[in-house]
Amino acid sequence: MASMAADMFVGRERFATLLLMRLTETVILWLPEDQSFWDDIEEGPRPLGPVGLQQFYLDMKYVMCFASQGRYLSRNLHRVDNEIISKAIAAFSATGMDPYSVLPEDEWFNEVCQDAIDRLSGKPRAINGDKELNSPTASISAPVNLIG
Image (tube, rainbow, N blue to C red; front, top):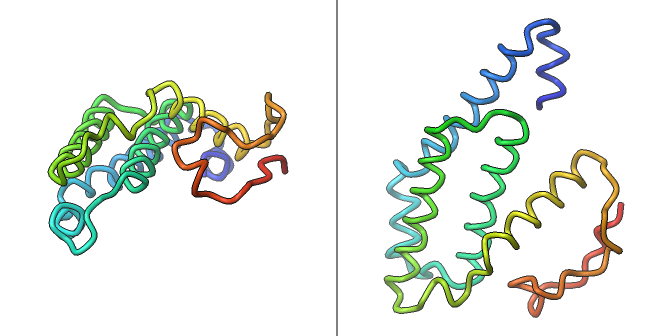
């Protein structure tokens, strides 16, 4: 999207950056207000489980990572993203489970996000492409060839 915006707004890079910042903020700011989404997570027939919490946490960290690298990360987006993570952790805790027993360290999430951004941008992988053995979902996911 950043590439398309840069092509469309040649000479107006700041405008393109602000446009992408507002687009990202709009999507993330909508999520905490979508009560049906949170009702399903908090009280639905299938509450947020360990893998769901890990994926949700990873998704929110990814938003912050790509927004930061694209210079779209505003203080407001950062704050709301952290609030969403806290809300998901609270919903998971309400099931009686300890969220921190199923979440890897933040550094793991940051590395996975950076790896995904590198792959999406066409940068070569720095590691040998083997499946990450410390992945929180390594035992349940199929082998993945990440070299492309």
